[in-house]
Amino acid sequence: MSFTISNPPALHDPVAFGYSHLATVTSGRLVIVAGQYASDDSGHVVSPDFADQVDRSLANLRTALRAAGLDYQDVAQIRTFIVDHGPDKLSVVATAIGRIWGDRPPAQTLLGVAALALPDMLFEVDAIAVQP
Image (cartoon, rainbow, N blue to C red; front, side, top):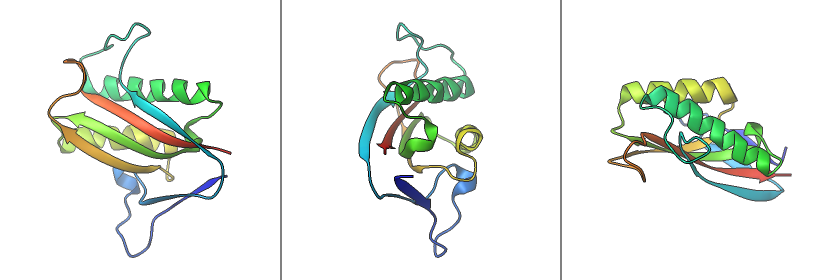
């Protein structure tokens, strides 16, 4: 692998919250993935449900990664953007990330925001992946 994920023992264990503290790139080329939201192939938001939007956004992230010959395991960092963020939404995001990355989630910054680009968007995710 061209990067390592780690959690220093002097910091709290963040895995249950859906992230790791560090992603150290050791070799390879960075692939930057723009923000992905719960869009269909025409750009319309597919559902008003937050959990559905998280799942579809992450599926769209995978589609973008695969276009570069990559997959979830190549992601070193994500940034998530949540409209009207709260503990219930954090739980949904952490569960979805756990399903994908298990006990090795990427480094993550979560941002609570007032709004996103389209009025129906509740969640967006971007990524930095490493191509060996």
